Amino acid sequence: MSNYPINDAEELAALFKALSNPHRLKIFIGLARCCRPGQACAPSMRACVGELGDGLGLAPSTISHHLKELRHAGLIHMKRAGQHVECWADPEALARLSEFFHFAGGDASELAAFAEAHDKTMGEQR
View (tube, rainbow, N blue to C red):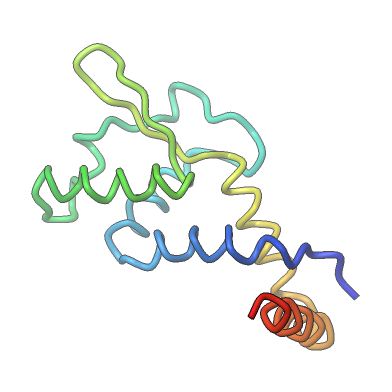
């Protein structure tokens, strides 16, 4: 049986909620391609806010809203660099997602145990 921590369900749900919007998911994927889970993203691998909207056909204010949601969920970091704002994927968030999907790819008995433990935890909270 897997040792995946059930108490991470709330945190994962917040990450997935932020990624449930197709535009935010596209932005995050673009940023995540530059980083590796658990490793710092090199400054040369960061994107400026203005570049993130290329190809999405969204207004700059909409891009800003999506970036705010991603940052609030802990999926990305932002830093002002002169007149530009740099963005990059949070390597720890990538590691959490990677760990979850590695676990989710396990066998059916692991998934059943996870679901059973989650249901039990939810029953105790009610």
